[in-house]
Image 1 (tube, rainbow, N blue to C red):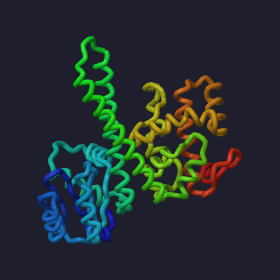
Image 2 (cartoon, rainbow, N blue to C red):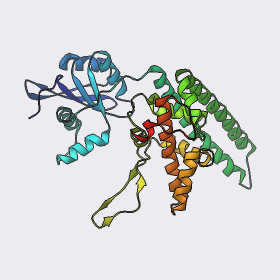
Image 3 (tube, rainbow, N blue to C red):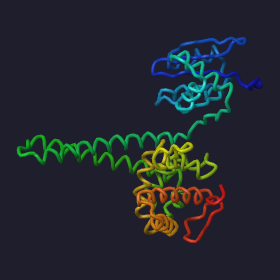
Image 4 (cartoon, rainbow, N blue to C red):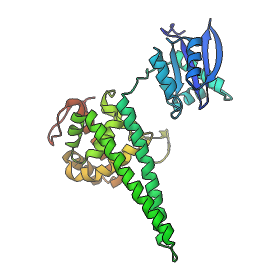
Length: 329
């Protein structure tokens, strides 16, 4: 038996247009469907009450307006990774799928499991994440246009008009990308001035990577140890072996943090030359016969450990400094 929860639990399956809601009324399971809009949110709160523990999944950007509304009206909001609830449903051998059933499973999960309560993020960080998304989209478009331009220039017959248009588009995208990246870094430097200086003291980490790392980690404020940071970046090792069955080599999880992983990997080439701890780690692994790519991934992990220790301690990088934060999380 589970002890009574301080707040009634409400499971909500979020889609673009609707919310499938599951709640308890006099110990009986009840269902409600409302629109994913302010009017629907008001109806939800009127039916279930504001002071509940609302359990929902990350569904792109569709859940955000609801989460903000419930938070602002005094509700406790728990936002789950879809994979977590999927495994929970599989564990109970459920058959079939519908929005109503998913909402009921979210209710059950909230009743049985310890939940991390969602916190409202600073406005400046929300704006920075939006700028980062715009930057990613512009970069993808720039690469696509650049590839098209290169392909056109290889053809025996070239339309001058097509060439001119592609060149113009590439120039515009390049200018927009530079402008967005500048605006993003300016905002991050204003919000995290001290942390930016600390991170840029690490050999191998430049201004752009320092800003992206602070945005990715939310300023390191909700992290208790460097292992959480490494897991968020998808750089934790994953092994699959059972008895005599071993599936391939130990690899990193690559779950989440693809953008920061790419930046750190590029930084690792510089760090293995200029950062004494990273250089020693790289050389030691290569001397043991490990391939260089694996050694570079280990350097990425070392950079994250250094970043965590330096931001938390407030002490700039020192080649011979060992932080207790890095060694004893």
